[in-house]
Image (spheres, protein in one colour):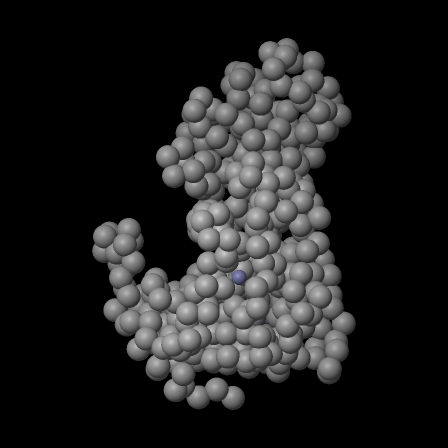
Length: 399
Ligand SMILES: [Zn+2]
Ligand SMILES: [Zn+2]
Ligand SMILES: [Zn+2]
C-alpha cells in the first residue's frame, strides 16, 4: 500500500528509486536493511534509498515493478573534459498543453516565488517555479563516485521570470522602466539563490524563437541555480583568473579599452554600458553587453545601482530590437561571478574573482536553422565578420 508513492528510474543497468513521499513504514524497512557502513544515511533522505538499491538491486524484487513510475535525471561528469551533463528522461520535460500558465488567472499557474511591485507605472514582474524544472530544490546533491566516474542528483533551482503580465509584450517592446524592473527581479533572484551554499552558480537566460528552443509562448526568461559551474562560464573563469595572474588586470577591461579606442566593433554605448560584437564571434551578429567600469557581479551592481539601471535597460532594449530585425530567434545569457559563499576548490576559493571577472550579457542570434556539419560544431565558423556585423547593427533603427 505504500508502494504507489515510489517512483523508479532505470538508467541502463542500475535501477534507482526516487522516494517522493517516503512513508514511515517503508523508511523503517529500508533503514533496517543492512548497509556496508561506508555511507551515512539520513532517515529522511531520498539518497539513502538510491544507495541501498544501487548496492542491492535485488531489493527491487521485493516490490512489484508495475507500481513504479519511471522518471528522473542525474548529472554525470565527463571524466575527460570535466563537463557536467544532464542525463534523463525526455518524457519528464514535455510542456503541458492548454491554458498559458503565466497569464493572470491561469488555472495551471506554477507556484509564485516573488512579485515586484510596480514603480514608474510599470506592471509587476514575477518569479515562478518552472513547471517542468531541470533542477529541483529539495535534497542534497549527493555527489558520488561510480568507479572513476562522478555523478550527482539534479539538485538546484529552475525558475521562470515572467517579464510581463501581457502575453504579447516582449522585452524589446517594453518601456525602459519595465526592463529595469525585470533586471532588478533577476538580480534579486540570483542574490537570493546564492544564499543557498549548495549552489555554485546562478544564472539567467532567455531562449527566444523556435530555433532557440523557446519553451513557452509567454514572454519569460529563466534562472537556474546549479551545484556546479557550467562549462562555458567555467572556461571564462579559469581564463580570466590565469590572465589576472599574469598581468594583474581584468581581461574584459583590457578588451573593452582596446575596443573603445578603435570602435570598429562597438555597436552602441549608453552611460556606463557598451554593446559590442566580440572579436572572435561564435555566430554572426553575436553581441555582448557589459559595464564599462569594472564590475564582477551583475546582481551586486544592479542591486546597489552603481550604473544607471535605466541606461542598461535602454541598451538591452535597443540591442534586442536590432537582433530582432536580423533574426527570428536568439539566446541571451548572463555571465556573472560564481557563488563566492560556496568555497569551491575548483577555482581556489574564487580568490581573485572580484578583480579578474567582469559580468556581461551574451546575445547569440540564430540566423539559420540548417543543421551544421560536424566540423563546425568543433570549430565555430562565422560567415559575417564582427566588424561588418557591428557596422550593420549600428545602422539598424531603434525606437
Ligand atoms: Zn501567457
Ligand atoms: Zn573588468
Ligand atoms: Zn561570457
